[in-house]
Length: 470
Image (cartoon, rainbow, N blue to C red; front, side, top):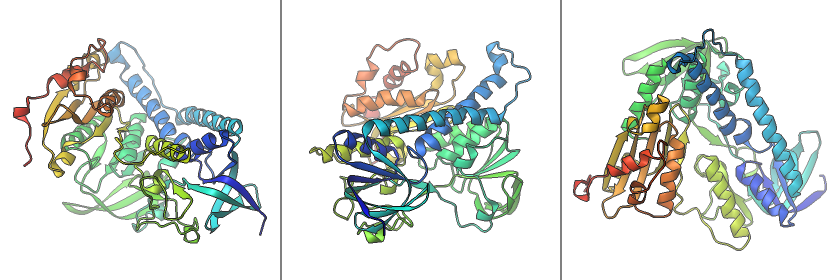
């Protein structure tokens, strides 16, 4: 066995939490190493968040060009070159990787490229990408190994070699007919983007609505958007079998309320869910417990069941957002430096980058009702936000849930242009535990998107008109 190399901190995985912890701790003089299998910086800058939004924006540009005449801009003969879309995305990714390498060098943290497997409680053997093996041990060990796309156990599905978001973002051709499995974030975002580039798109969702955890009016708004875009959406549809090869021709046998039938396409994209990258990591050698789904069990401090080992990000069951992984890093960093932070009570926002966007923070109506929390509902169409009229982007709505006991904002949902930016204004008010009247009575610049929040919160009903769930 190779000689062990000792570090103060040994981090497995260079995702958002792992890399930031490495940079921060190395700068304090602690000897720090990160073992990364493939993606320097993790999935976000390489194959997920940033690349997908890059491609989605190219699709929005294509949509603008296609409707240029509405704005007085003639764009006859417009074509989409997927090689150009991919080249723009790759340039951005290459820049991100260069930046990450510079940050590793500046911090003093050592980046080790290879695949790690535990051979002892705090010891890993790394199969190096460049060849050979090394053994590393850490006084403190941190796991940030992330997740991967889940491929359902459907006959013929794996053999069809379907696209995941990783391969979809590398396409240098336009699928003739893309069939998307899954009506969640990735399926909706990429399905709409490919449709706007020019593909025929069919989206299959097993449940009764798209974005299944959201309110019915939200799901219906996205459904109508997709139908207007020319996307075929099949709800309550179970995939039974797949034949053929994605990229050439696929045939899918499905079951709906009308019975079994088949549908075809040229390409197949799987976007149903994710599973943690814990299989084959050798956690059985560490005393680290995992749950029935393979996620690492942690407490509110992100400590595992094994002394001196922490887990962060998606592999620890944290909500699957980069911004949550950033907060995981801050919790661990501050606690290592003598502070005390936990995961309790985190107000986690999200944004789905369809066009227009869907964003939410706090409770929606389904959650408030399931928890028997009474609320007052304020809701306005996006057309009442005057900025949207100037942009010709009036689709969607804003809505807020307000406490009946006081004027606290319980939740906010935006489906419309710049929804994510609007949400951040409301989230800041919620974090400060200020009443909705603070925004209602604010003087906000005209005509901005944020100004629409004053209109929304002016529509909050009196407490006597609250929706009581008791």
